[in-house]
Image (cartoon, rainbow, N blue to C red; front, side):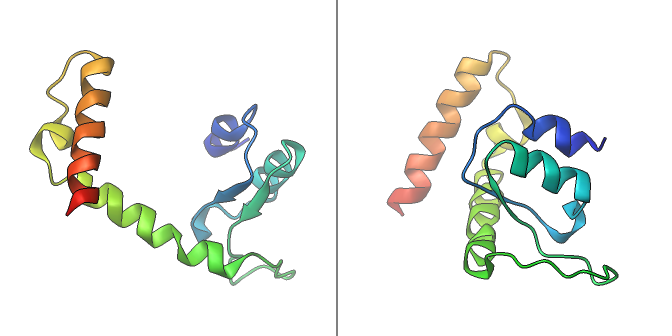
Length: 101
């Protein structure tokens, strides 16, 4: 079982958006068993090219871009805070600052 399957197992979610590299039958099965919808484009070598929500997949770049902008904050990129509570607080503060721009 792939490590991504262990991350998704036990989590109820609507749509699971992932890159083409995560296109595996075992991951699809875990997502479907949890009641979610996999939004993962098929790899080119697959004989059966399954369908996926292309509009939802395009929105993945917005999320990844937001995380890239968050990592421009030195304190987040290097994780100076020892406590998870302080780190999460600064992530929230940085997120608010980015959304207000």
